[in-house]
Length: 382
Image (cartoon, rainbow, N blue to C red; front, side):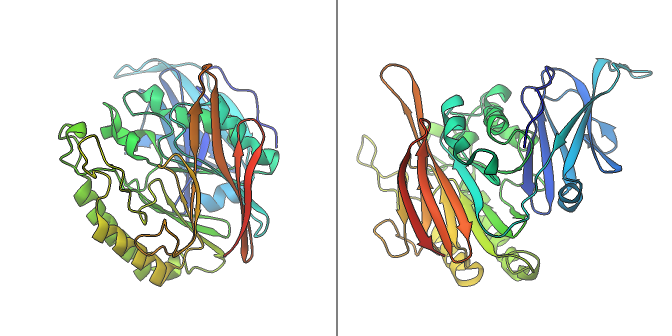
């Protein structure tokens, strides 16, 4: 499926992100403008309580998933703002950009690519993620795509990569990593990234796939000097436990809904693993929330029965089966840690990501790099 030429007013092509039963169409722009999206005969707006937003650099237009899946295409409509006066504001004429869209409709040979921990590596990570070419069905951006959230431009690195790989034509899933919590714009991250009612953890349904995003927040205790009193992730995780229980109580409308063939967990941090790396003082700052993470694993394993968990964070390539040396809290399923950034001595960038192909009863996992090589291939029973 071909992507249209990039309009000069857009930073990159839109990202069509799955959130529960909706798509959040995220569109980064260079200047003030009003924006809407037309799907079929219906127009959806980037608005706040009936007021269209113009002074933002990432527009969000929420559309029903069923509507866009049926239409198989959408039209971005923008008007550049000349002057937003209290009376008779002026804008330029509207510009319309049509994108084809390919929803996930098949239940075998589903091609998923995960990028995590790219830490600002754009072109090399996109080359790795183009492993499936035009046959890619779902792109997962699983946290730490930038080094920090100090600027909106940094946050938009994720959209620039998605633009190069998905081009606005297939579904994406965006998950938050611990480095995303750092920087001046982190407190407003829900304005710039997909979320459900402001929450960075949520479930999603794409065709026959149901997934849940787990957000561990930061990877050390809240009182760590590195954070300078800017995080309160412990109560955030406590709320997340209740959210998992809510999904279990409403299973008929989530992971046990009709038509769900695959159940995935997306978590930047592989929370079922005890990260016992020590700091310069011999402390183990990363080994936190053992009881809570063990409870998450128990709830997911006992009730949800996911087939795979996608992770990053470790900057390594690992396929961890339940009961392996990597499993410290009772894995509910195989845990796939697939992301490895590298900056070589000559300054060139290199990246290894993870390709997954789902079929009934089996998943093929490949670690592929930015040079077009497949470094490891393994088929798992699921």
